[in-house]
Structure formats: structure tokens, C-alpha cells
Length: 292
Length: 327
Image (tube, each protein chain N blue to C red):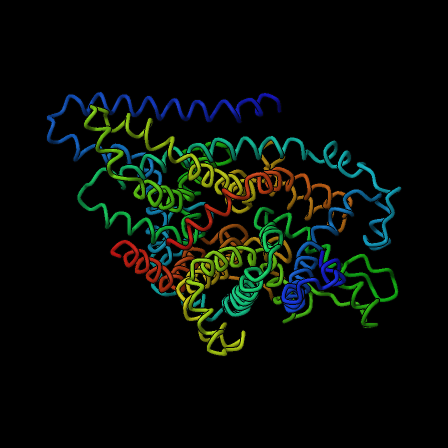
């Protein structure tokens, strides 16, 4: 694109001058993009190369004939990666739904049900959203052990939901309180109960915000290592993808043929979501940070 | 396995059904109360599930951590004898722990500097050209990748082979091939290995800064920039004297977020070096104290120290929130 513009006959001198002037900008952006893609690209190419080639030659010297799916088959068959994928789904999907449901209810109360102390409580929530989760891990772990929840999925559903709530409530409240007041007033005049107004008015309008939050929470929980490691543990029957891969790293060290394929299996779903729903992901980040 | 896969999608339905039932039940109960008390009670009913979880899993443990930080607790105990400031004294005198605090300082300076600096420069450049979208997408993409997968990606970038053997790591291939230098053990050599880890963080978070700063930039009035240009200001002057001051609130939001990230950084260090070779950080120390040393008191002390470091940024966040609300 850039080269084409450079050699095009300058029919409009102003235009070509503008393009020439922004040429350095294009070059800088192009180089940055290439640098940013390089690490992932290197791993992607390697994941399709045979073991002896990965171990002895650089990924940039590959040829198309040698690429195959052997690494993926090996890691899925021999290292419980399939099980870890299912475990990740079993962790992430219920957690995401639970977080969004509880956050929406609370956020709606904060937005459209005036009560005493609402402001103070919300301030505490804003403050809680930056508290490092490391602060609560120790006592929570003891509590979970006392209630025999450690090592079970409900423990992680609850933990992740709690950690996700401050930000989620914040995001949903920002959305709900921006809705027009007249909308709810006319609904109440028509005799709608708060529950009906919430289900029929607020939630349907909030679909884009809910989508943002869902993607956010999904990625966060799917990619998390610390919480899963602590409350679920590393045994193969419950290990989620990040835990399984960090076990692989410990076990095989530089067994790149397994690590590269495993990493891409764990990235597949988030990347798919990212590229298909990028708009909502960006919206969520903007709503969460700029308004905060 | 198939059973679990089914449950993964049945559970959400059960959760929603449970919440629906809860709402129906509480609404029925509320309806029996006098009309005046209903609106006062309803918000608490709606917030109760969320508040209960927050209370049990976040607020109570955080307060508990403060208490535990003054105790000596080991093994499976829930509490222990009061030891005053002993844990705190150890935290600031133990060379390992002091080293991890110093490393967090490196993270704050370089991680925040690079992510916000590069993010700001790119946000301005992207705004000037027609094909900015793909650049934003490419830089933002690492946000979708887990820290663990990122760890694998970057361990491969930094892979080291002894001099003379073919290098498979991209960076050492550049060192030996392009610059004719001996290969570098990026993750082992101090203090450079801290920078090597920070580079990974920069790769992950610059896209985040870019997206937010770019959105802030698009919200600025274009006329001010134009007016400055008409008055003969160079592009650099426009950037320094007009763009940066106008964008200052957004820059501050982004920088605050990055400083908090730098303080809480755990995953990159845990996955890439496990805190060895002088790369330890506070968050990883907390994990070690909790798991290897089984010293809940010490872990809590470090957590409290971390919170104290974060406190100013928390206050700033709350202030900004109130300023926004009252506008």
C-alpha cells in the first residue's frame, strides 16, 4: 500500500506531499506492528514444526513441507490438555454467568433504588477494585479448607466471582445510571414492578455492556493462573489450562514441541473471542478505565 | 470428560434459575411488608448476594490479613501468638525480601515508563494515518493471551544455546547473526534479567495504554491543535504544549493503572524465572511465604506492605470517581 502510493504519478501534488510527509509515520507503525507480532508468530510457526527441527534450527528457516499437526496430537493425547481445556470451560462459563448476574442486580440497585449510604458503599467498592487479591488469598484459603471446598470447582467459581465483582458492579452501574430517567418513570406509571423494569427494560438495553463484561470476565478467568492454582490445585483431574501448561514448563523445560502446541491450544478460544468481539472488548476497557 | 463439558453449560442455567427463584421469593416476601418499608429494603435484597460474597471472600480476609500480619502463624494454623512488628522488621531487613521490593520499584519505573511512553507515542501516530485500526488490534492482541502462554512465547524468544551451536531463540539469533556478538543468557544475568521480564510486561500492556490514550486523544477538540499549527508551532511543540497538557487526565488514569499492575505483578515472574536469579517481586514472595514457607503471618505482612504502597493510588481513584460524579 505504501509503496504503491509512493510511485503513483503525482496528479494531485498536495495529496502526494501529504502522503510523503506521513511516510515516516507509516514506517514506524509498520515496524512496531512487526515487532509486536514476531514473538507470537515465532511460536505459531514452531508449533507446526517437527521436534528435531525446532530443537536444531531457528523458526525462521522453516519450509512449508515440514509443517504438520504432530505436536498438537501429541500434547492432546499424552498430556491431558484436552481434559484441561474442558476444566477451563467448566471453570470459566459458570463464573462468567454468576459474576454478570450478581453484578447486574447490585448495579441496578445502586443506580435506580436510592438508599441511605449508597454513595459510601459504592466508594468502598471503587477502593476494593484495586486491592491486590494476594491480600485475601491466605485467609480465604483457610476458610475454603474449613468448609471442604478447596480443590473443588465451586470454590473457584465463588472466589473468581468475588474478585470480579467490584469492577463488574462499577461497569454496570456506569451503564445503568446513564439510562434515561423517563424510561423507568413511564414503566412504573404503567404499573411495572422493579423486577419487571429490570428484566424488560434495563437488561435488554444493556446487552452491549453485558457483552463487554462477559468477554472481560471470560478472558480474565480463562487466563488466570494464581487463583486456580491456589483454590483448585495442580492435579490433572482439575487442572485448568494455565495450570497444566505451567506444569508442562516445569516438567519438560525446553520441550518446545509440547510447549508451543500447548500454548496455542490455550490461546485458541480467547483469540477467537478477541478477533470476533474486539469491539466489545475495547468498549469494556474504555468504560472501565476512562470513567474510573 | 463429556459429563463435565455438559455441566459447564448446564451450571450457568442452574445459576440463573437459582437467582430467578431468589428474586421471586424475596419479591413475594417484600409484598407482604408495609408499602413504606419496601423501597428501603429492596436495594439490600438485590445487593445481598454480591455483598455477601464480597464480605466473605474479599473484605473479611483483607482485614484478617492486617491482624495476621502481627502474628506468627505457621503450618495449618489459622492464627498464632502476637509478635508485634517482628514480621515487618523481618520484611525490611531480610535481603531477599528487600530485593523483591527493589525489583517492584524497577517494575514501577520501567514498566510504567515504557508502556505509557510507547502507548502515547503510538496513540498520536495512529491518529494521524488512515490505517490505524490494524496497528491498534495487533498491539492490543497480547491482552487476550494468558500470562502462562506469554511466558512460553517469551521463553522461546529468550532461548539460549551455548556459543557455536545454532541459536533457536529469536533474540540470540539476532545477537550472533546480525551483531556478531556471543549469545546472551537473557533470563539469568543480573540486573538485565529484570529488564528482560519487564519487556514481556511491556509487550502485554502497551496495547491497553494505546487504546485508552487514543480514545482520549479523539475526544480532544481538533481546533486547538489546528490553531497552534496555524500559529506556526512545530509538530513537536504541538505535542508537548497542547496535546500532553490536554490529555493529562487520561495519561494519569493510564499511568495509575500501570503502577498498580507493576506493584501486583506476579504471573510473568512466576512463569519465567519463579523469582530466581534476583528477579523476585513482592507478589511472588507472598506466594512463596504462603506455600513454601507456610508462614501465613509473613505472607500477610507482605500483603499489607503491598496495600500500603497501593493506597495512594486507591485514594486518587476514589477522588477521581467523586469528581466525575459531582460534575
